[in-house]
Length: 292
Image 1 (cartoon, rainbow, N blue to C red):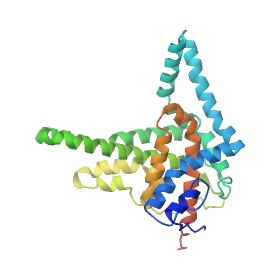
Image 2 (spheres, rainbow, N blue to C red):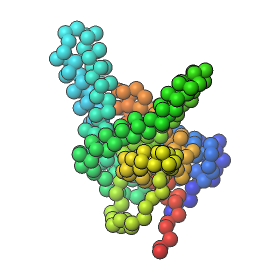
Image 3 (cartoon, helix red, strand yellow):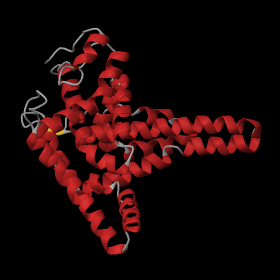
Image 4 (cartoon, one colour):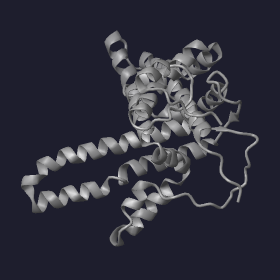
């Protein structure tokens, strides 16, 4: 197990763009380290020819498809550009599913350049990836239903407070979206340790914070629905709960990198490599479980 670094944040930040251990200090140190990880991932992808070739393949295929659609739809350059961008934005979520196996192989190939032990790729089936995408879309939508209901009640019984509550609702929505950006990014960075035991130990992980939040008498059914929908991401949710500062910095860095559709397509491999590094360094800094 590699000990986390305890260097002062100002000095440690000089080495955050190179692979290295998780800072031992919580707070701003881990926030800054997490924020730097997407740039570290981009640097490693550009530096390693094998990773760069693997990362370029989805970009070229998807951009080529959008270009073919544009060429077959319009005759003038302006119209083709408009169709190209519209197709790119409309199909922006597709590469995560269509090239999921490519990104998983990239995650496994990135471990050694990141200074981590070799592992194999975690390769879920296509139907599993589609089902998980649907689950996550439902979670993003229904997770905010209580906020919407609260807004409707405030608007009905306290109209003067409604404008102020709109800002609160937008802040909660942004936080909720950022939370799932982190979870999805970490999920793409998972690899398989061939030496690790594969059988289920039967231990039930703790409920995520958003499941516990709605465990009140009138919303227990809603809480149970959120628990079932979020089950595929329990590993990622536990990491977010244990390292909130790291998760916030990492999420902000990934969100900034993936905010624009075409830029997201180009930089998504960097986010995958960054997730591999985060997961690997958190694993190294976590004490091994005591045998029962």
